[in-house]
Each structure stands twice: as structure tokens, then as C-alpha cells.
Image (tube, rainbow, N blue to C red; front, side, top):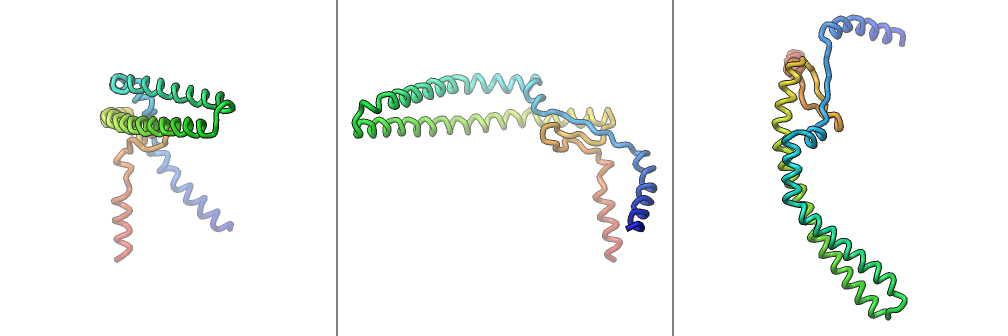
Length: 171
């Protein structure tokens, strides 16, 4: 145990000058904020509002009407026969299913459009991140909310060297 600790301490001491000589600088970008606050992002939001705003208002009105019918049914149930209740419940169920089908299709369409518009922003944003990272001599840049890498300095890529050394040992 002491021997392992001594070896670890020796390795750490030897590695410390290397680490200090090449300090790694790290940054982050909140891409959600870029999507919301950039001019491209605001244009995308406006496009979505124009395309889906009226549908959204329609769905809100339809949803309100369904809720009103549900409340009316619950209020009037004690005064209704079982057949009347079943008929009203079936009608209501059919309306809900139609609403969900229509709203679900629109939701999928909206999601596709959001993704398409986001991609049109993310590409240029990544180019800016890379240029800014090089300018500021950043080694790593993380996406704030997901901690995904947006930029990695290619000088930090050790893959080729690792492969070369493994191949040498395999001979």
C-alpha cells in the first residue's frame, strides 16, 4: 500500500510540470440562450408564432369547450339516466380523441419545424464558438445545460499517438 502511494506521488510530481506548462482553459456556452436571444433565434420564434399561433389559439378554444362539456356532464349526471350519461360520455370521449389526434399531429409538425429552425441557428453558432474559442485560446468549450462539448482544441487529441504506441507494443 505504501509502495503504491509512493509510486502515485512520484508520478504526480513528474506530471505536475507538464500540467502547469500547458494550462487548459475551459469555457461554456448556453445554447438555449443563443437560440432565444440571438437575431436568428428571434426570427425563428417569430416564424413559429406566425405559422402555429392561430392553430394554438384554435386548440385552446377547443380544449376549453371540451372542459366545459365535461363540467356540464359532471354537474348534470345526477339528473340523467344511465343511457343519457353513456351517450354523453361517448360523445365527449369521441371529441377528446379527435382533439388529441389533431393536436398531436400539429405538435409533431411544430416539433419538426422547431428542430429545422434550430439547426439553421446551431450550425453558424458552432462556427462562432470555434472562432471565438481560437481567438481566446480556449482548449475546451462546454454547452452549459447539457455539458456537451462544442469545441475541442485539436492539439488535445491524443488518439493518433495512443494508436501509434499501442501498435508499437503489439509487434
